[in-house]
Length: 274
Length: 324
Image 1: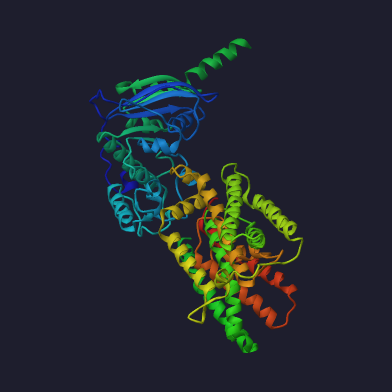
Image 2 (image 1 turned 180 degrees about the vertical axis):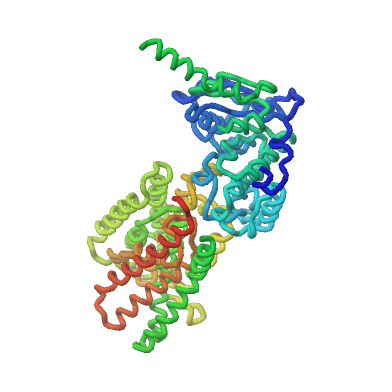
């Protein structure tokens, strides 16, 4: 492992948050979208990284998108920092500090033929403009800051984003969301398809952000990542929230058992009917 | 692979320089063969015709950057000129006629915008349909004849026929002013930057909180407005509105934009590039006339140049993106 990355990975994953804080950052109740997911209720506490797990197709991405107003939902209430908020569309979610990192960076996460500065500043255009005119100096400054804080590797911030490696592209997407100063970030498969070193750096960043009070929800299909990074995990099966595992119970065995429980039961039922 | 990408992007950025050099070569070759080419009259005439087309070019370029095609620009230009003359003929104050005509074209643009932006209809075909309707209206209103602007509107005619300081036509000044402002907006304003985002990847733009539907509506109102201005200026210049005014402008501007480096896929484009493209095509048309080559060849030559430009655009895009 060390040889592959060329630097020391003393602990594979960042240290988890052992203290359980009482402050509730986000509370979701009864989130529903007909035929897709039903009655999803959970809460996210300050300093905790929440994992959203389930088989592919179980509705995790849809839940995240529904929560952020990207897709329409048929019911549910959301409280942010104890205050009830109404999320009509993605723009209003962003205004409330709630944002979503897509799992498909090439399809809808990045502007591949635009440069790094443009990609990082995409969500905050109005913030970077005075009387409608963009302030290049400020945009460049913010880009440079992210280059340092997220350790993004590139030569020229004016180069096109499609010339960067997957890991760096992913960091740029994260920078784009961080430029918002968000309160809650939902990341959908944030380390899929990127090199080990970048994976680890992103995990560290997430833990750091969580420590600063930013709510992190992570959708992932990689067991080691979930077990290594998340303080709590909620399991989605066929659009329903079936389990809430936390602390020491967050193990690969428990998660897999929770995800596939019904599959095993369904198979047993099938055999019984034959 | 990376190095060839870099070389290709260098070539693309030199595109404007390339066109400029092609134009210079053209001018030298043509003026050698036909000295009339460089006469003041010819230059001014060509430049004046260029100006109206280039104004349309401003609107179309920005729309293309946002990934929106507008095939109705020629017909809207024609409609604007016809409406202006008709209103004036009915006794309306010329400036009021101009305003009303402009607003009507703006409404047409809004219609196109809503159909494409809100209902997600295909821009190409939809604006083609609108184009047919507008041109149809033009023929209905004029019955195929040219209609003349009533006399006594000298202040209005200054726009199209006047000269500043005796040599610089007002119309060219108007176009240059618009082009400079438009170029500034394209490079520096947040509003047009949003257009770039929508053109580069509409899905990513939506996930960046940009209302892509509204952006598209804005783009089509823009193209209609530019076309209306072009039509109104042509009335000021010639004093008449013909049923065929604006014919072929849509295709010429589209070709010029592609030649000038505006990508058909959206996300790229410059005002200067399109304008240079229009200059190049206009000079070519002018040359055909001067060389007594049948006007029928115009279409063939324009089409051939457009085809070459499309192919170059395709090749350079294919090298830059891995998957679209």
